[in-house]
Image (tube, rainbow, N blue to C red; front, side, top):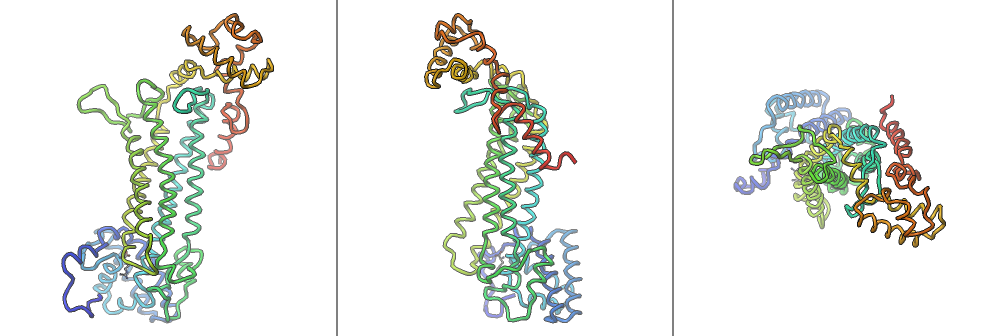
Length: 458
Ligand code: ARG
């Protein structure tokens, strides 16, 4: 299509390095939609005749029907989805096809198509995140009072409830959704009409195309519009943070499913066996979610480095913007679906969790708190006394609340009978009823708010 100036065809290597059709054919729906909006505007503004505009629109519908039926043909000579579609349109409707590209360049065209694609990806991510949140909230409601050890440094710290633990991920995903939402707001401006870089001399109506494609307004600067890929970086950066959260949750499942922990039985549907060890049931889906997060972060890095240092306006480097975004979107969708299935179907072994909470001196802080509250010790001193009690319990191989009152009084005479009520794991979680704390009461309150926010009650 630009052969007029060239004496010979491109060398084979040029043809291959130049072609983006192998990946940008994924943009075909957006490319057809944007072309239809553009030509309808050209007709309405009398830049092309209404007969030609109608012929082009019908032809584009036919091309779309062919793509839908047979897939997009991959001819490297046609470089990309834009030229592939225009060339097929010319075969179908003849010379009028050549008017479609009036007042347009592939630079504003691809920027528009790609924004539309990323906008859909954001909407899909939001819907999948909401589904995972609903699964978390359901399981949290089931286990608002189920006690497990809470960890710091992966060492038993204080008892928490499984519901509280699951709701922590609800909060992370809530922030992820708000990052995607922000990205969508900034993305939603239409580059069409910026043409190659400087705008166009044709009397176009940019409001009209922006509106037809669901954008809030046209972009304000043509140089920026054709060379801006912030919207893709915003999407990838939201996706990367989301993937980090999923990978942390996946890691918890991997640890919990390991036999020494035994906190969870993974659903068969999301596990695999071993080809040599018959007893094995491996948490492969969780491990792959953990692994995929690395690739999603890699996609963000790849596009950042591609964009770094590019002068205005369009440079061909920017053709490399699509593969990382497509890859990240695919991996994120799979990861969200896998984690939703895992959360919904995992069998939580609350008996094992409770046992672990009782074995790990998880209520030592409660003993110290009791000494402060009831016996009036300064916290530092209470911490010291409690340390001695834990040491003694460890020597005797028993839980804290299995020490006798005489044992405890030998450590500090201010300890009284009432202490035992504070040392059970139930008492410990019930006591942590500060806003956002692990007390079942607090957890249920937050679950109720989450259900309302997710529209689960209507
Ligand atoms: N295939 C190109 C891309 O994805 C389309 C834009 C080409 N523009 C140009 N001036 N060669 O970026």
